[in-house]
Amino acid sequence: ITDNNWKQALVPEGCKVLDNHNGTAPGLIMEKDGKTAILLPGPFNELKSLFLDEVSPCLQKLQPEVIRSQMIKICGHGESQVEDQIKDLIAAQTNPTIAPYAKTAEVHLRVTARAADDETAKSLIKPVVKEIKNRFGDDIYTTKEEETLEMAVVRLLKKYELTVTTAESCTGGLIAGRLVNVSGASEVFREGFVTYSNKAKRKILDVSKGTLKKYGAVSEQTAKEMATGGVFATDADVCIAVTGIAGPSTEGDKPVGLVYIACYMKDKVKVEEYHFKGNRDKIREQAVVKSLDLLRRSILANYRG
Image 1 (cartoon, helix red, strand yellow):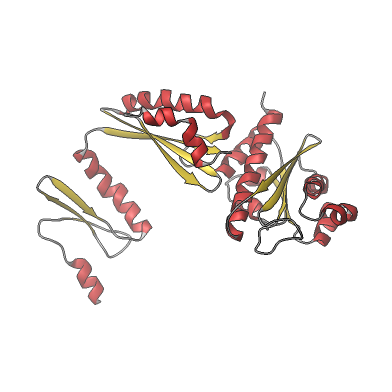
Image 2 (tube, rainbow, N blue to C red):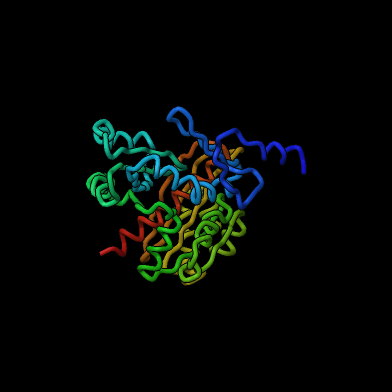
């Protein structure tokens, strides 16, 4: 036995030992002077199982109240914009409370209530969630804790029986990767193209040489032709296309962070222009989120009754 294992076996007097079935370091619960301290191992897979199996029941005994949360996930606004739209709700909060969490190109709101029982907690949360939904509308893509943006997109594609193709330049296949990570995406995902070079854009997506020469690879016109070409190359219902400058070098007088995202749907193409901030990875990540969100919003605008 190593010295580290011996140290892990040392337990303060009076502690309750929590068996760790996924590692060697046990969890500990100590109670003294009306206070409770809980020690857990660092690796997440060990911590998670110990918390769910041992700690959560203990906390429920210590805190007889029920604590229930509802997640609201928003795309299209920054954290400051979201907080500004709900500042009155935050200022007046007591129970439930509203906690904003900033994500890349997203904001998540957690509405949490305490009550004597689960049904009462739900009834406290419901009107707050309803009010937030009224204020943000389609900016909210889900109220499910586990549902990601790409899951929401795949759900909508399935609902309206649509197929999608991706045509990517600066994101290098990241949009396709996010979509195919969703279980069941094979029902809706037709094909993904990474057309990083001008030659690939011409050969695979039929972007015209004249467009590339006149406007450049990073332009509204090129993004539009990429989206159109993706649909005709695969006979998909929808194509989301993206072209941009992720950096660190610029392209002529076009700045780093300039990104065009296009969505072809029902014989029309919508193009959005963005100026993202951050390093190369951050710019690409923001472009992926905005692309998925444009796809989601386009489906709602064109197919929802």
